Length: 239
Length: 239
DNA sequence: GGATTAGATTTTGTATTCAATATTGAAACC
DNA sequence: GGTTTCAATATTGAATACAAAATCTAATCC
Image: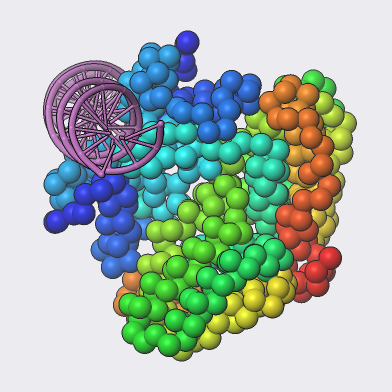
């Protein structure tokens, strides 16, 4: 296995995450440090640190001097992750919409234009990530950024499934976010973020079911009460 | 410097955090790995890992092969942390209130009784932490737990200031949470969590100003729009 | 036969050593 | 005088080596 070698621990985390989404690693399965280290041709220290990162992301279970295992990873878990990421993104959108910083809106406007014109999932993904990055830098303080970083591994990988699957929907959802931000409507901007990531989660979970990573049961698509809680963020008009 | 030695990296993180709250470390100040390692009589690997944890908590800035620095740490930062922690706690409270698990409510009832009868900040703090722990285990999935862990260093340390300062207020706020949980009222339970942590943040920041850790400016006590956003979680009645 | 415990083995955590990168300071140049 | 370049130094990141703890195995006891 070849490996990009700036920040080995991050590369290790990305590698394990990929194997998770490929279905190679199942919930509860043991993660052998030595095996991963040899597999990637690196030492055990960065492997250990990569697994610590994944533990912080809620994807790996670890305990002092105990072995590491992959945490529960199913459709409900992925849905929870997107619910939370959506809630936090709604918060950043709200702030950006309220502040109306011309430089930020200018940058987002250019990205929105490029997103409207681009074709191909690669270009779209790159622009969409940049869009979110700009919003986060503008609207999040240190701690909110720290929380968002928790999903920096999982969300982009899952979102890619949705982009490949339903580019038009993704484009529309992101454009709706931009419009609300440009209009300076915090409630709408928050609601748009939540709606967008709900869409992304549904598409991603569907794709993962098709691939056999998740079992094909289709019950939890609708009756997850978690979304209701998250939706409270965006209810009510601005104070 | 003596050091408890199970999980050295966590001990390092706790040590640096304590020095932050003691005012020894200021924003932007450099963190020398070797200095900390020698200071604590440990190797550099666990020091490095402890700083990585603090980076994930938003308290330390790090970059590849660059030195580590103390992140911005002022009243606004602490307020943001409590705002986010309050939002996440509101989410767990909502879920616990909706589920009405008898075993959980039983355990919380016992804790509430003990909290009503206890005196002394030590005992209160211990019981309050257990209360929150029970709620989190009952109401949070893997990812929400991961987010809450982000604050496992900062929040308890800051909360202690509030407990020492205003035990009666803390007791009332936590009891209000229990009542809403027992009554199975998700909206009220969420609102109570947010109100409680807002109170804790105000008290903690006041105490830190007195100690000279934060400058004495008192403007941001009221006009922080962040709380408004977080308050949206708890608005509206249950669907 | 099943549970228990003690030793062997495996696995993780930490120290030490070595390599890679950034920072610093001084000399050379404009 | 100020700026740029390049070597010297300092500092972090990773590999190896060692120590501590848990798991596994098997023999013993009930």
